[in-house]
Image (tube, rainbow, N blue to C red):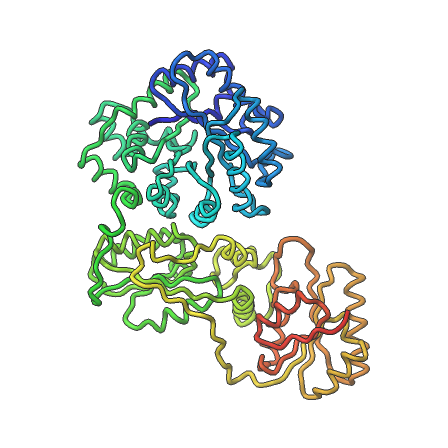
Length: 571
């Protein structure tokens, strides 16, 4: 089966667009892909669906399967997600009207909504199906975890994702394998790589040679490659001319042979994952050689564990630079040269990023095991902040972090850790690992850190009950902290600390974050632990003897990051 992506047809004259659609249908295209948000501009909502409906009204041949999508909205010139039940129900009604049908052939969630559990969106689609308003339901642009969660509550029959030679991450993500396993049809959108990449296919050596062999264009070879990976995959290229539509439809007639597959596998190794079952690809472990994927959040302590793996060649992006995929050629060369044991210690948050390592190792017959440092994000944040303090003697400001993080792997922006947590796909045996070892965080003693300390929120440090608590620990180092982006807040914090110093007749060191609200751009803004880490390092505090005193529940995260005791006082 070959489909046609209809989005860009809204960019040309309507009569020409209808002619293209009819020509494609006449050439054998049997699936049309549209969406409620496709149209001439922001205001032409459901415009592409209406275009498809008018084309089908003029078409006298077999009716194609029409797939539409809901769950995106356009606002202020940008895409936004909306996977709420009410929105999907309303979008379904409007799509039925635009397409002129009683029941939609297929309705897909255009993209998961971070604010709405995907289970909720999937149940909403299933309810529309049960009500007879939709014949089939599916998802678009999902991860494996999202697909599995949706499948657990709804009968998912279609999944639409981007697959192209230059965009093969989904082939490494496990999504396609899961779809093939469960008979879910896969719609491959942007199979030629989009308007910018498609023209470059003709100059590709592999595709060019196969195109010459079969007497077709390189684009046709790409579509034939996708169809050959699995009967479940339906390429849905776009076309804006009759000639292009007729050409793309020719892919259905191309039959690839084993020599073609071998050439394509060498060009796009990730395709092998779809054609050949894991059990046939996985090498047997004999104990003589191994590759270790050591993964975890930034600041988890991967470098320390990697150095403890004796006899392993270490490949690390922080030391070698570049991107994660850039480490694979080094691994390939090492295994080819006979290196028996290799460890790659990097974040490896996604299944797709780990797949590159597995595929490379398996090519050399070497099994792969995974060691996952499952470190809480609060602890990792403290570790990152401590490394910055150790290296620079102080916490870096937002501009310093932004500039240094480009070249210094020890300087990590706060958002990088949140992004890891958001994107993390836990390692699974289905990836092909020989074993998966989950290492929980263990705080190590620091013999040179012995002093007691009290770290206090500045808004309560001058209160009598807090002062009494501080008087009870006369030998503890005292620190106050505050987030004070405005001059008034900074003055209030300084005044409170001045009063505490006078009442206690002791030094109290004040640290203030003056950076603005919004996404965190520094390590000093509570409840990030930077200021508390700075206090620990400057005074060499023993965290088991540290109390963090505050009326704010959110500040418990700072204490947890340090391993200190949180003492909550009344606001």
